[in-house]
Length: 302
Image (cartoon, rainbow, N blue to C red; front, side, top):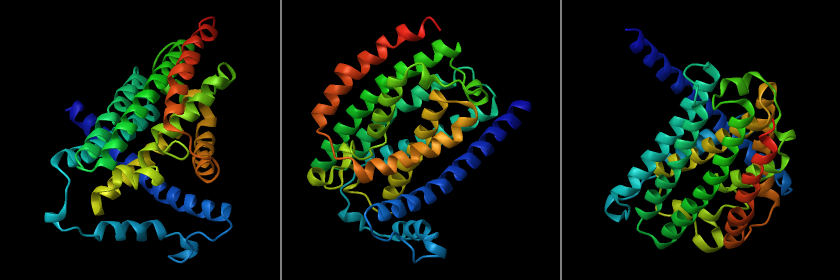
């Protein structure tokens, strides 16, 4: 009986965490559009609701009610499986978010975070390959390989965290401000670069480089599937902003650094030029992974 109540408590708490994060995502999208507008010396959305506060909800309604004739759709069942898997991974991220803050059964939660991240490549491959579109196929291959590249760096950073704090539990990182940034500052810079690639953000948005791939993974999607892909991308962006703050700062710094990372995503989109894909992948495998591996030498004495 206790296990049933515990499972129900975890489910409800995770669902609340998902809803809270999705509300934040709605205002994150609105804030991004407004900040980009001011950076480009123009007005952002300001018509729907007070100062445009309801613009994201109006866009959601517009996307959901769009209709596409079933006989004209080229997507296969693999495409739907990819969308469902991406939504499931987003819910799993929210579950990990809840587990870390609850302090329950969080002994190896960072390893579970690695497991969830490793499944992202399969969802991207299904979404692109199931679209039956050559642009989406190229996009999914790029995204999956970029995700594998980020996972290699992420695994090294998690091992460094495990060596420093003596385990892969997450609640101690929330309680204590330990500032791993001061021990391996270069790793933090590599994390920020990899985070842009994993979240498909400019200048490393190789999955939908408009000049060559039209819209990439989203080319054959509309209404609810497109909304799921779009919202999950921003949700994962928030989660990795929070994970970076948790791993490199911890304690009372987590919330503020999370918002700083969110602003970093917006600033990079408005400012930085796109880097060639082969140069980025070569840098990550030739230099980034090597630097992270040799960072173990600085952490071991600690």
